[in-house]
Length: 270
Ligand code: NAP
Image (cartoon, rainbow, N blue to C red; front, side, top):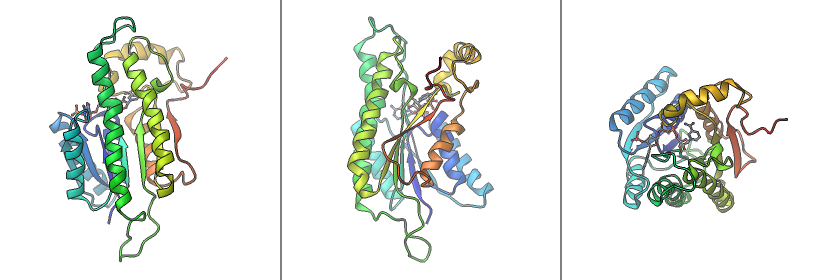
């Protein structure tokens, strides 16, 4: 039996990068998306192909769910449970930027509610449901022949952002949502440690995706001027590799840990 992961925001960008990495490792996948069915289907096909290239067969199932909606979160978990007997990894990756970057003194409640609902409330309550499911199933994945052991430990990942600690006064709602997510990580890490479920915050920096496309020229300039010690854009695969390390159980004595995938952006320099 392959280990199974549920990844939100898997149709595009970072979520797609994470899905492709896990597919290459032979993981079965539940790929959640909001609206972009064609992109989700393409990711699923590419994941199956990536697994096959490594001599493995995986299942990749797509599920539509708006994470801001409680009914959709429930449907997502119900569909995942119908398809797979257990879940080994949840990756809370889906997120939105504010539709308009508004100054802190002008920013409106509508944007605040939307960004907080998708980026903070959605992952919190989805994780609550998934954690209950994980706790119902045995900790170790049964190996071929029915024996247990040798499988990676279960884990939950939250994809936050450098915005969890960096003040951008033209998108305060986004920063607040990611700072809140950092506390969600600590809470679930403390709650689920006794069950052997590791909880991690993966904190990307500037990653080339649709989300950053509107500000590409500005970030090109800033990166060129040395904003990040590693002077390049991050890629979805960079984030995928960090999640793969967690999935493989390579951090066995860590939980509640922050993993920066930001080219060194977080370093204070003088
Ligand atoms: P992206 O390219 O815009 O992709 C967003 C993904 O989230 C898509 O799969 C989208 O599905 C899904 N999504 C959007 N709204 C949703 C909703 N209401 N319910 C469920 N799914 C929804 O974004 P990205 O750059 O890959 O970002 C992924 C995560 O990384 C986000 O949490 C983001 O905040 C974080 N992050 C990104 C960067 C960066 O530089 N790109 C940096 C730090 C952190 P559809 O395709 O169906 O619309």
